[in-house]
Length: 219
Figure 1: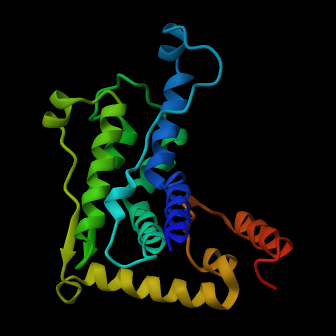
Figure 2: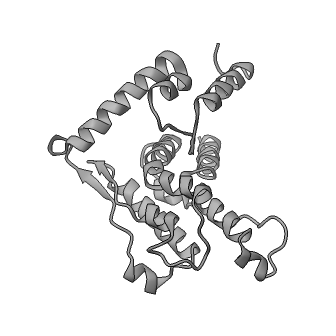
C-alpha cells in the first residue's frame, strides 16, 4: 500500500508538471528571455526553465488512491483560467516591464471565472497560481493593488446561472463525442479544445489518436 501511494503521488506530480499554469509560466519566461530586455541583461542562449512547482499537498484527500483523479480534474478545470493567457503569449507582443493595463497576457490572466458548487478548493489553488505568475511577470504588490486579479468563484449554484448550465451541457456533449469518436470528434464540433493542458487542433487530434493506437493504448 505504501508503494502504491508513492506511485500515485509520482504520477500526480508528473501530471502537474504539464499543468496549464506551469505552461503559462514557462511561456512567459521564454518570451521575456528572448525579448530585447532579456538580451540587454546579457541573457544569451535558451532561457532556463523557472522553478514553478505546484505543491502536491493542495490535492491530498482522505480517500486512498484519489490523488491522481483529483489532480487530473484540477488541471482540466484550471485550463479555463489560464488558456487565454497561454494563447496570447506568442500572438500578441509584450515585454516584462509593460504597463499591466496594456499587457495582453496580464489582462487575460486577470479575467474572472466561475465554477459550480464543490470547487472552492480547486479555485483556491488556481488563485495561488495566478498570483505567483503575476509576480513572475514583475507585477509585485504595488501593481497588483492597482490592477488586482479579478476573483474566481467556486460555489456557484448551477440552478441560478444559465452560464454554468450551458457549460454543463457543453461538457456532456464533449464527453459523448469523446467516447464515440475520441478527441478528433471533439475538435470537429468545438472551435476551442484544450487537451492535456494545451489547445489542440484537428490535425493535432488526429496525430494523437494515431500515436496512441501505435502504442497500443486502444484499438
